Image 1 (tube, rainbow, N blue to C red):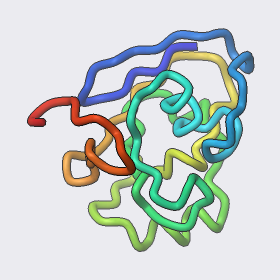
Image 2 (image 1 turned 90 degrees about the vertical axis):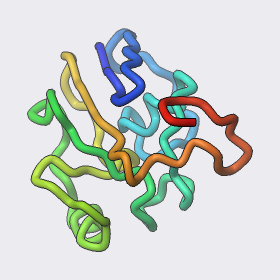
Image 3 (image 1 turned 60 degrees about the horizontal axis):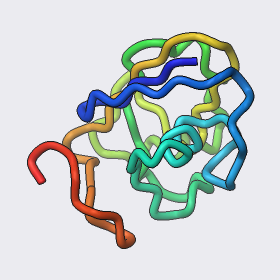
Image 4 (image 1 turned 30 degrees about the horizontal axis):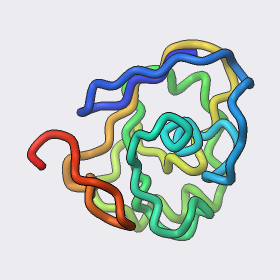
Length: 123
């Protein structure tokens, strides 16, 4: 498995379905991956699909993600800057081994929240 998070350009690698689940969104979700590797992806609701702060754009690998359920699609309708490749990190579950590239939109990046240290471009 290989997941790259933009704009940070940080790539993480791990064996498919081997990551410990720690309650960050759905198991094997993009949010779960980010949190397990200390990559900050805002998730104000705790990853329960009640907000849009983990909204991201899937640049590569969308076919390996589970299909969005109605609750995710309904929530995405309230997100700013929605695109055809928009997903909520807490709900976008990696179902197949492969390479994935996701981007946290510029207007959705919030590096200083919930006690997280400032880092990343422009901080």
